[in-house]
Length: 196
Image 1 (cartoon, one colour):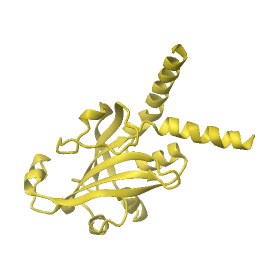
Image 2 (cartoon, rainbow, N blue to C red; image 1 turned 135 degrees about the horizontal axis):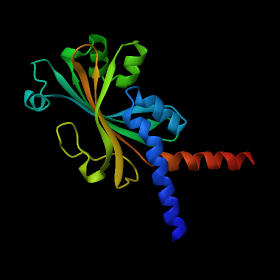
Image 3 (tube, rainbow, N blue to C red; image 1 turned 45 degrees about the vertical axis):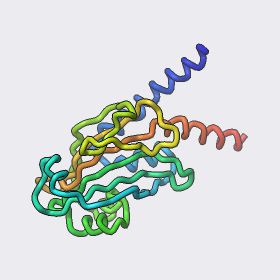
Image 4 (cartoon, rainbow, N blue to C red; image 1 turned 30 degrees about the vertical axis):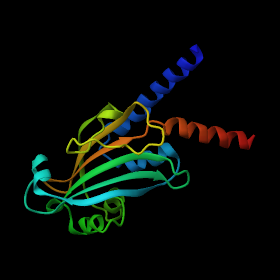
């Protein structure tokens, strides 16, 4: 029993060390997640819909322009492992037209489109940490059923704005699967044992 508790403590420390930079970065989190998973990830869209003025006003962003909410997960291309659950609110008025069209047409992930178009952005994290799974919520504080196969009790998250100029164009909340670390360890141990 003592050995099991020690392993759990070691895993908790590893998670805090590894997720620390992910939660505070103002860069593309997808790149870090791909490095952690050691494989490319793809976007799976859960839902995308235009929101009404009432919800837009809750965010303090009502302007009459269309607003979209987009909920997705990032999944390992080879393993199918879900690394993050993401919810974005897109303020069409403050997003470059080509990006907005790609998002509205559900063609690609937001980060990949920005990167492929060489768009200059600024990301401003405004909240991050670890949260109890029962408190996971979207940007309107409605409960979210985080799509991780084995949902740990506490999960890391961050909220941030993406600016394309003076005003935020996208507001994001990302929940990260802390089981990415044991998943990666098991994958590497299997690979090493095959090489022996």
